[in-house]
Image (tube, rainbow, N blue to C red):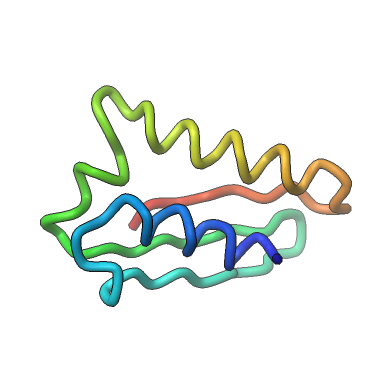
Length: 77
């Protein structure tokens, strides 16, 4: 399972409208950015209180990509 699929799986597990989840991988010269888009009604479920769920998603991605050459960041758009 690659990182994009991992983020999609976690996001779909959290939201009420999993068909509206969109995950894109944008590779830059120094890093890789995973863009996560969800329905506006589900935004709070992905971010969580005080950003705890978003931090957890980022921690899981960081742990999964420790051996990658470039750092991987998650942005919730």
